[in-house]
Image (cartoon, rainbow over all chains, first blue to last red; front, side, top):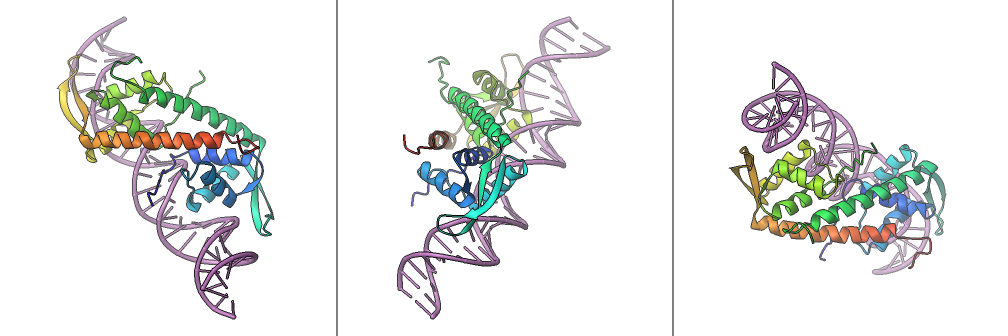
Amino acid sequence: MTAPKSDLPQGTLDLLILKVIALGPVHGYAIAQRLEQVSRGVVQVPEGSLYPALHRLENRDFLAADWKETETGREAKFYRLTRKGRKQLEAEAASWQRLIDAISLILGMADGGAR
Amino acid sequence: MTAPKSDLPQGTLDLLILKVIALGPVHGYAIAQRLEQVSRGVVQVPEGSLYPALHRLENRDFLAADWKETETGREAKFYRLTRKGRKQLEAEAASWQRLIDAISLILGMADGGAR
DNA sequence: TTTTTATACCTCGAGCTTCTACATATTAGT
DNA sequence: ACTAATATGTAGAAGCTCGAGGTATAAAAA
């Protein structure tokens, strides 16, 4: 067991979804699988988080979707990035980087202050 | 201009607060100031986030507080970490590290897949 | 053949955090 | 006398995540 259970901080899921879709059209179910595989199970995406997130992103015109057949012959909704979505991905990725750099500074604080 | 405005993802504020307090007793107002200074303005902590967070952490017995005088002669609530709080800080810091490593893997994905 | 598992989509409601705005009080500066 | 900074606090709105449930098809196992 040792359930890792690393609940995603609010907002980061959108970034991860945009990133996966940026690599090529995929359907929702596959997005969740890739995130889990690439992150080695650290990032887990329940369907109750995944689908609402996809709909949000679609409503904001970051994503567009078409129904197509998967390799295994089932109908699925394939998402792709819009131009707006690509810009959003860049913005969110930059923002994320700024944030983790800032948090690194904070977590790296020692009593002396300097290092 | 170019207001940075980097809303903290849910959950990370607790970690940052615990870290600052771990360096020595401080009052709430000073915690917010240090976070902004050390992060060079990237992390901004509005009062409506700060005080509820402190109360949450106190209710969970991660923090304890005493009223004391500041250097400038005002009464303020000084927080310190409990033993439980120190453990929580370690756990959350480790969890945060796992998460950003995982997200790094995802954001680093290229079309090739491997690297 | 019947049942289970995996694929693939979806919604609802609870729970939690964050933030804007407001409210209070004291001290220092102009 | 007024403004800004210090210092704490609450209330309400808005947002995201997640568990639990529902629908449907196809493959694999029993």
